[in-house]
Length: 125
Image: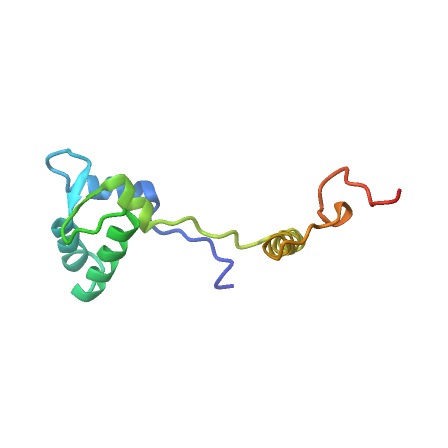
């Protein structure tokens, strides 16, 4: 099905190598202007407004508040290729984790036998 198909697009490494090809000064960085030009003129061209949204988000994730910035190629490719979630999660383990987190938020202590930890014995054994 749609969600179970493995992604076979460019990897983080592929993107990094492609962007490094435009780093003629070999600084490991590209200017925001260079990246905007790449996004809006090459390959599957982005609309300028979409490129602006992407670059603003990249700036914010970088902690940069300035209007114009240079992006480290390695950091920018990490931004573009976030880790993909596991498409076949372990339902019971996720449920235990969720219950544990919600109990902690509410200030409740989970009994040892319900915590799912190995070797935990029920009270009163």
